[in-house]
Length: 190
Image (cartoon, rainbow, N blue to C red; front, side):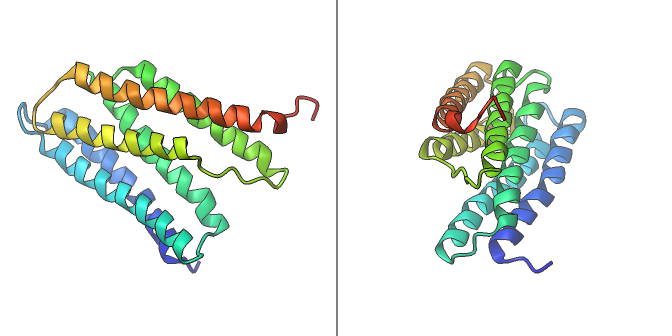
């Protein structure tokens, strides 16, 4: 398979996810009380993966390299990276974020993916809206801040909660926006 640069960056992001997850899992068993090197390494991996997301989209649009492969894999890689982080955060001990927020975010992501699948059968491509992009950017920033604080040994659950619930609100609102925009395409008689 001959991949263009944006698609190579997306593949790199996908390949980084298991290393991110492994670092977070190791942090539970071998992390220090004050400085958790495994969380900080996972944070670095998350940042690199997030930067590839920004660059692959920018390069693909600027150079006209948008492909069907990229349209499929890019959002999948984004969702896998973010959901991996949020799930791992909700099972940390002590808990970093509220699992209810994770459930809401997951539900929205599944709903939007479902909408995209349904309307694709009608030849409609669902582009990422401005609110969806804001949601993604804020969620990634929140994840980075939470990991940084936890990695240097500052566990401030209420601050983590504020960050994740703002991300959850943006996620829910953008999900409702997608649902309303494409509701007419979801025909219960088909």
